[in-house]
Length: 113
Figure (cartoon, rainbow, N blue to C red):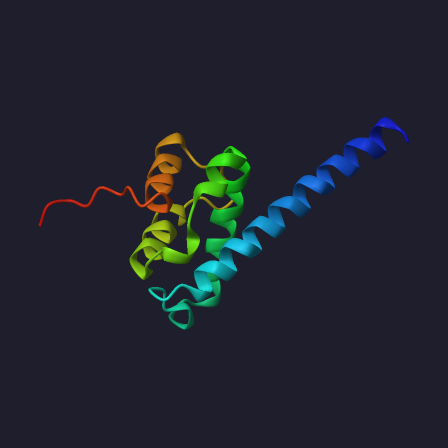
């Protein structure tokens, strides 16, 4: 097999792994009792998929596997969407990545009321 074919195969495996991980996460979020999935529009669902895909790419696999997507809340999803709103076509900044990680790790710091 030529070097180009091996590289292309590697890229495709990476892409398939990413797509599968995102689909699994979305399905868990969709079934989460605290998430009103039908209230999210098509554009928001697509953005959420983009955000999750970018996170999967940026994070270590062990970190990704620690997330419990099934216990996210509607507010968690809205917070992720707000953070990712300007990311289209851009890589996540370190600060944004840390904020998203805090949400997904359920370590988000809520401001005092």
